[in-house]
Image 1 (cartoon, rainbow, N blue to C red):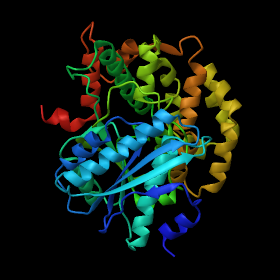
Image 2 (image 1 turned 180 degrees about the vertical axis):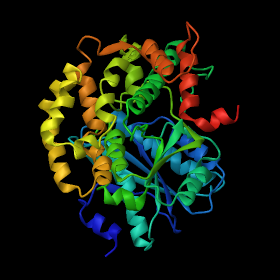
Image 3 (image 1 turned 45 degrees about the vertical axis):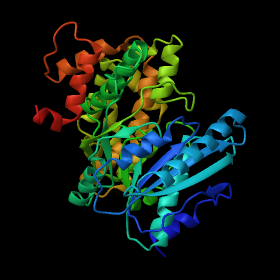
Image 4 (image 1 turned 30 degrees about the vertical axis):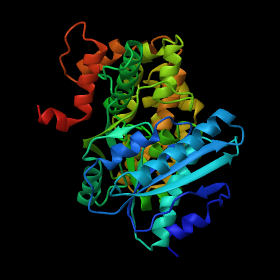
Length: 427
């Protein structure tokens, strides 16, 4: 039995999915798109169709979905989307990819959402690989309101072929903040939101966390074998990308694709409580939270803990108390509240050498652990700061000179360049 067959046997069958089209050729690269109440899915498909074809077969899997509590308006919009996609497919020159269009209507509302739709699409890709008895493939996560640079497929293919050990890659993203048709208020909110995402990732890296990655749902690709090894996508109604990627990152061997770019839409959305659309919705309603961020001081409190994980292997647990006593009081309190010492004692007993322990240290003290600490510290004195101030401070700490009164747009451009070294090399 293949790893794909074994994985599929453990998944619950879905009787609510209708296959509106089916691939006829073997493909090994799958673009998976959840689609719920989207006004213009065809534009996303046209963007993909305009790309340079890779050398491998490509299948685009779209899951148009709704819950058993969706309104008649949403159901009608989904039906309209299906008609538009089918008309585009029939009346346009055939693209280089196959289209697998699925309609998952009336999903139980308890679980319905982007996570389940993404899981349906990715599991279907696994089913195609298993049916064709293929050893592996690439699952690409994309969104129905995004577009891509023309080298999207070839760069993803090259990343995995040149780095066969990679389990997944994140893909460079850039919100269209300079679009002249974007309303000024939305432009400001989008700039702040993307700056926050980049500040968060870089601050986690700066304080010593080695698995600091972007977790944007439209901007990653995972090897099929790694996908099933880690149990597949979750059914979370939001934040499924964060939880999935920070789970699969524990496998190690990952990279960042910077030569191609995904362009997520800068628009308001009611679809999920997290992400660009949700943040902009709150922003347009008057929420000022995008102006703030976790303070750099809070990230700095983690540095002594992350500086030398091997210490916890080489020193006896009783001696750990001396190090913990020197940490910030908030971190001390969190350490004991989460029984982190007990987790690391168990880990130490199960690791035969310091190298294994050091790698697995961040399986316990992971991104979920860090974010929970940051959230608990945020309401405390000094736990929160102004985004522009904290983002500027981080650049100073990284030895980058930043002029006074640097705008949010200018800061975002600096962070984009730091996140994408290839863009700095080309300038």
